[in-house]
Image (spheres, helix red, strand yellow):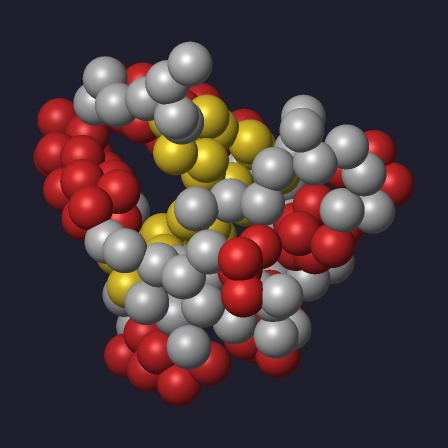
Length: 149
């Protein structure tokens, strides 16, 4: 059985989710993608609550990609929540946003995001950036929290 790299995508815009999904699939990496529509749903997934209770079906991600502006709980609030959770504190988080405002970028890094990428307008550029991103995080060693407990 091949080992898949699990990515959780938190993006409220259906068109952006579809483009992101297509771009991730285009990279031909063995990835499992779980798409969520807002910050509250993202926290529920990460906690394993409600419909996300089954960790076989909804495993903890190897990478979280989060949009800045989402309803109910925005991306900055998600980052802040994740970084305060001991079992998730080392989860790689990438903010993928249409905003390139200095204050948004600075706040995301202050809260602990690992990377901030502005959504490219060109699809091929998007595919390339996501490919580099996935390659990097797939090659990075991270502690196995199951073995640490």
